[in-house]
Length: 384
Image (tube, rainbow, N blue to C red; front, side):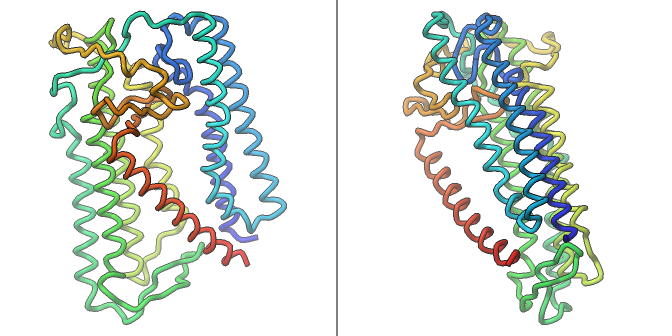
């Protein structure tokens, strides 16, 4: 039994435990005006029916995580060599569990809203019209992105400086014991592949940070100043979380990119895996402690000197449950916004009726399918 299989098995167990701990608390991180993606009055959350729905969700998600945990152990005992395939398809199993629990809960919430007349008679959350509430890219934490950019720049410089002295054949892949098992002829494209990937990671993380900063806010109509202060604080701390993720992830690929250039330099697999997991932890912690758009954050409202009475766009389109497929996917062709707040959890969603969003989603889906076909065939060939 290889050490790689053992390492991947431990990774599966850690993911199952983490997901099993996070899934049950998601309803409590979401705004009280949403019950499993359904717009409801905040007071509806205290009813016995809503509490029962949440309780069932907690039981089923916890049971699902336990089943996945047991299945991972059984798979490892019966067919340890297939662990690498399990890791590959693990995310789809977790997504299936999430959808399998959330969608029925969403439908039950819709029925409860109809049967119990949970009518939303006023708009609890309204869109902001003023551009200053969208945030300014200059307020993004530059410190993290400057460090990330310098690391990316260093990876290009080192690769280009080292290129003339490299042998005609350089290693491009390493096994679990960090021994090279694949080589390619030296070329500029091969040497710069890792720096280019690094540049893509840097641009992607900066883009996500910019989206959060510029996203249209959903301000609490009853407490607009407090709501805006929470949004502002959330954007700030999440920006730092993403910035930290950018630095650690870029650094991980930077040190990995040194291995083809310096034969005596090796990076154990556990180091890169630890860096990858560690880079995600601050974002997970922030999401849990802050809640959806920072609704759980304590703020000082005296620092906000803005009047929102004339700024809030009282448009009820976002409150229409029919515009949300399964309470998760927003589709409103009359809304010019590309980004909206999710109705479940603490993330940012997309307006899937917009053409650029459709094109982007189609490209990502095609890339995902092609990538998984390639990786599945590759891993099966390794097992055989």
